[in-house]
Image (cartoon, rainbow, N blue to C red; front, side, top):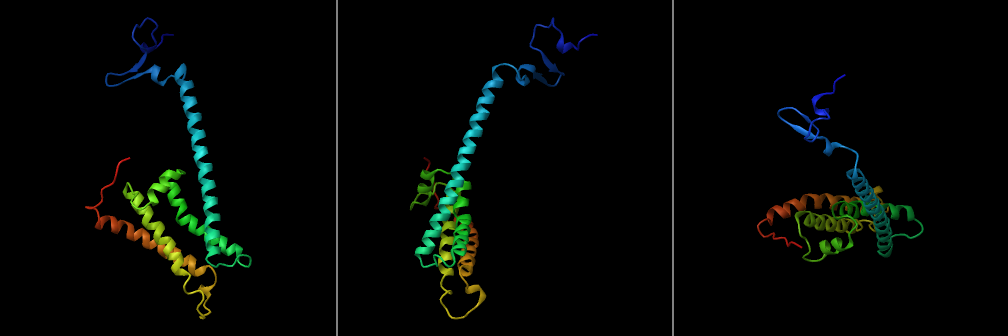
Length: 193
């Protein structure tokens, strides 16, 4: 039984799978040697880093839910009677604001502070985050105005109007952010840090 020419032991050049147009070096695709162990260490380190970021993101999401719940209660929401409804509004606000920020900025507090400071936007994405978060929160606040009116409509029940207001604010932010960026595109100069 004869071996193919690329497995010939008498060949002095590197073993490779060759045709005239391309050659693949067998050392590059080999799973033996130190390359496998260094890539395994890198893979394990990458998995640990990813899991750490995921756990911190979940923690920030939960803390944001508690923060929004506390703020909504301080603004006058029922504390005991409608705790589940109040917490569901907090989860909605967190999903519309914090989740977006976690996806774009990650669990990096310094990046969040930079983006939400007065002139901290360094990219178009940062500007979109600022506008959509502000519109969502303003929408939830404006949505609370019809609650004390004596209309006795089903959409005036706590927190339906605030939820609708936050959703309309979010949608307004999704439309307003690209429009604002398009209108101000010549004045936008982003700092590089």
